[in-house]
Image 1 (cartoon, rainbow, N blue to C red):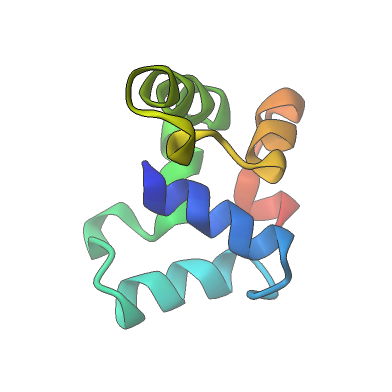
Image 2 (image 1 turned 135 degrees about the vertical axis):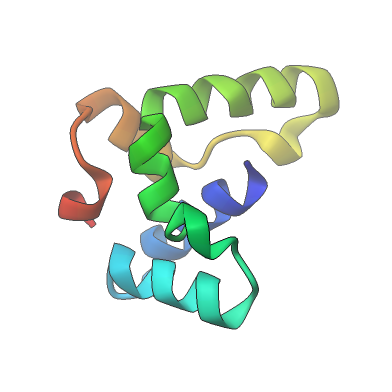
Length: 86
């Protein structure tokens, strides 16, 4: 979950140009499981709302390092496809 949050944060801070860049970089650069398609594709499969809910539960249990970033909260509120939006 932290990697998904960090991917959304990287997009927020313009470290990556888009979701596809983030997915490709994560799979080939840092070993994100290829069968999940990358962090943004995986967030699409789970749904941003579910990712936010899981991160909020983890933040309540383990502390603020699991707090969802602003971009992820915004995506969850808007719904829809993350890959198309990023």
